[in-house]
Amino acid sequence: MMMIVGAVSRVLARAPEETASCLGRGVWENCFRRLKGTLCVMEAQGTGDLDAAAKAAVVCAQKHLPKPIWAVVASRSGTDGEVLAKSVAGLDGVEKVVLAEAEGGLLAEPLAKTLRSLVGKQEPTHVVTGSSTFGKNLAPRLAALLDASPVTDVLEVVDEKTFVRPIYAGNALETVKFVGSGPVVVTVRATAFGSEGLETGAGEAAAVEALGEEEKGAMAGGPSEWVGEEKTESERPLLDAARIVISGGRALKSEENFKMLEGLADQLGGALGASRAAVDAGMCPNDMQVGQTGKVVAPELYIAIGISGAVQHLAGMKDSKTIVAINKDPEAPIFKIADYGLVGDLFSIVPELSSKLEELGYKKE
Image (tube, rainbow, N blue to C red; front, side):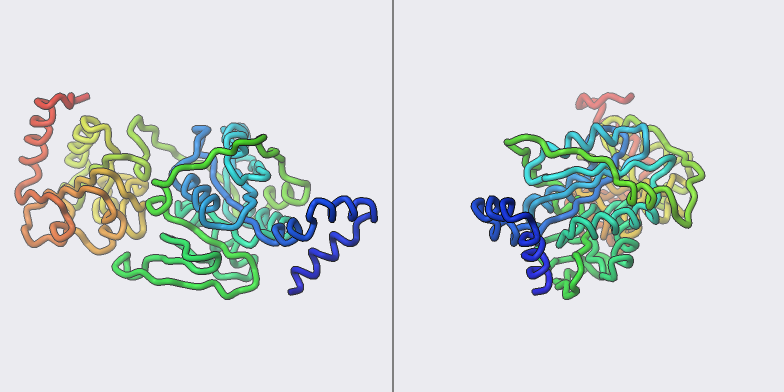
C-alpha cells in the first residue's frame, strides 16, 4: 500500500499542467504499471552476443516476469560491452539499457553495490540473471545488500513470486514462494529457458546509458582487487551452449589419456567436458567440469566416457536429449539414465568409434 501511495504522490507533485497532461494519457494505469518491472543483469563475454546464461535471463524476463525490462550489461572497459548493449536495446520489452563498465576485471562485490544503487532508483519488483559462474557469484551478494533471500537455479516461473527449483542434486523439485517485501532476486538455468526464442522489439530501440556518478563510484571501490586472469582459447563451442558434449571421467587415468577425447570432440564439432573426479585428478581445467558444482548442460547428444555417474554429475547433464555411456562396469549408475550404453574398455572403444565416424564422413582434424 505504501508503494502505491508513494507512486501516486510523485505524480500529483508535478506541475498542474504536467499532471493534467498525464491524466489525459491515463496516468493511473501508467502509475500502477511502473510499480512493476524487471532488472535483467548479464555479462558481456567478449563476443558481442548473448551467451546461454544471458539469453535465459532475457527470455525469462520477456515471457515470465513483469515488464518493462531494464537491462544492465556488465563489461570490462574496451571490450564488447557497448556492442552487446545496443543489441539488447532492440529486444522486445526492454525500456532502458545501462552499460556498467569496470576498469580491469569484473568483480562481484563492486557490481553488487552498483546494482543496489540502480535498484533503489528504478525500484524493480524482480532482478534476474543467469545461473552461471557470474550469476552465482553476484546474486547472493546483491540479495544480502537488499536484505532479501535469492531464489536460485529456477527451472520454472509459476507466478511472479512462485518458482520451481531443483533440490537434492536434481533428484527432486521444490516449489518456493518469495514472501519478502523487497525485489525478488532470481537466477535461472539456461537449460530451462535457453530453448525459448528471444523476442525482438518492433519499435524504436531502447536508450543505452552509462552509469551515473554514484554508480561509477561503487564500481571503482570494493574489498577485492583485480589481479589478472588466464584464459584458454579454443575453437570448440562453449560447453554450456554446445549441441554435442563429450565428457571424460576418472577412468581415463591421466591428462595424456584425456587428450584422446579431443579428437572425438573435434570430429563431432562438440565441446569437451569432464567429471569432478577428472578435474580433481588434474586431467583437465575446472572450467570443463559438468555437474552440481560445475556447469549444467542439456545438449542434443551427451557422450559420457569413463564416468560412473555419481549423483552430483548426473545433476549437471541428465536433461540431455540423448545420453550415450561408455564404461567397463555394467553396474555403473550412468547406465540407468543412458539412452545407449556400451560396456567395455574405453581405450579400445574410443579409437574404434573414431574410426567408424571417419568412415561415415566425420573427418579427424
